[in-house]
Image (cartoon, rainbow, N blue to C red; front, side):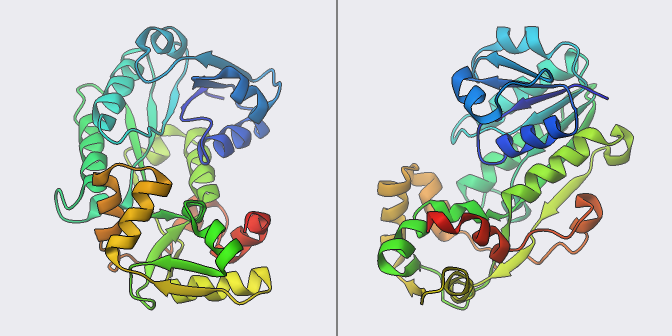
Length: 289
């Protein structure tokens, strides 16, 4: 079985991916800033190699990527994402990597340069796709993560019995479970490279309004939770002051139009199971609300 290298291993998606790979007996290498954090997440495993480094540490990556055939790439950087991803991909392909699985965003399906979030992901995809003599490049395009509820909703539900947003209460937007993203990545990384080739997998499992989510939260938590519509200015301020994202990202979150997304009914083919819906995800995480 091919060795898999994971960049972005300690985040909500990456840490689930690593655990899935290890459970399948896959030799896995992770590049992390803090090895102690990796140890806390993954424990000891003879199949796990931990490399200390970061986005700027080319030498650590160059030395440790040799011998791997697969690379998982998830980069959290609001300004230099395309350059960082291109650099990792170029080094990886030159070192013998045959497949890269990249977490992009469903927002790239929108108009060109529609907002900062879509632009940085589009530029990243283009930078890797256009590399000369590259190997397979599989792109995952998830929409909003269920775990985005941890931006603030878990706190407002806990203390105010409400979730807040500037969208119309009945406007439906797309969602996906981080577990589904991790599991699809694991499947692609452990199945024949030629099967997935240069596939793009769009990832939306549910399309829900604010009122829909409030009803689901009410059922799961056994209390009445409401969706409260606030102004765009109030939501923007919450992203900047409490989620601590820059203006370009906060504006993109508030202004993004996500009404044209539909559920991707074929996801079960590549997940090898039905995708997770919001209600069971909340059941697993209700202690945080």
